[in-house]
Length: 465
Image 1: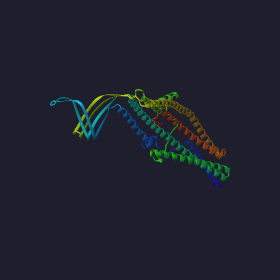
Image 2 (image 1 turned 90 degrees about the vertical axis):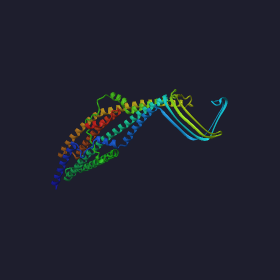
Image 3 (image 1 turned 135 degrees about the vertical axis):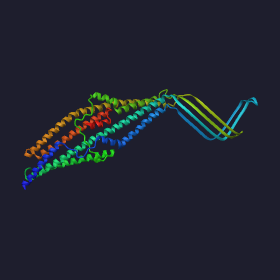
Image 4 (image 1 turned 180 degrees about the vertical axis):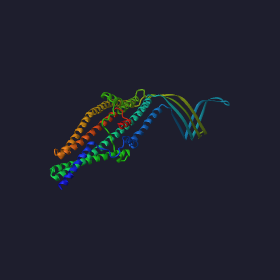
């Protein structure tokens, strides 16, 4: 019996060494991974956020059309059909007719009671000069640019979110695989500890420690699987992909997406290209145009106007049956300017002055915040490079330590707890390095987004690495 147990223990030891070698060599992908390109394509097709943002493009186009229309002719038509009472009296008029000669002091009286009335008119107005209309047209142009810039910023935000989710998905899958390996390794160590205890080759504490470590790893594995499933479901809801399809892999080692630039270069680029800053500057310009609309001569309007009208009345009146028809045609230049608006224009001007000041201060604040964000991202990148090097060295050291501990365990110089600790430290080093590499990519994506350099081309860039 003891011989059989010893053989079983020996087999378990061999299994532990073999499994630990697999642990050190890394994890292979059991299911085919979906590419970032595929996830982004599905996001573009199904994301409600993207559909909403693209609908906003029509808003931008509409504002441009409104701006152009402000300086085009306006045509008005009016028609009236109804009943009217019409009376006309002319006294002291001069009357002349071939059969009657010329008469002075003539009277002409016309009367229609509840007669039939029709009025038709058409008027054309072509704006020639209007400071308020000019400011309004400029506002619409700026609002169109603002709408387009906001749409682009929103689409970039979805792109960055998609890339970040893919990175996190890859990291979550790697974490599950590492912990699955660690769980198998811990279970093998537990089995070996129990066998050694049965042979009297190790104390019961080895078995208890191995049991505790195995349970701890199982709990970590369950938590990692739940986190992975939650992330897969979240991505599946926005892309309509099946959650089981969402297996992502990113080889993040030594991946550089940025060209070499100094911190000042990145800050200058952000101040010029950052989309949030561009939106704020456009908002400032819109506020300035609103201020122009309440300037002293803003209400002055000069228009080219033309009109043609016809009015008819017919029916019976005090002097019998009667009818009346009048045609009118006119064309000319019309100018108007408000003299007094009850103080409204002055109060509105003060409000607009305050709005411009506020928008100017918000622009300066956002420039300061953007500068801080760029510096923070840039320094994170610099720090992360050293951090990754340290973690790579730590992983290599822990792998060497694990191999040494395996040999020491076989010859009795190391305990089960030593082996368990070495396995755990190696797993944690691998995960920490993967996390650091992913953060390195994320910091690069953040810097590209802050400087207005992010685009769909970044997906191909990531895939090409």
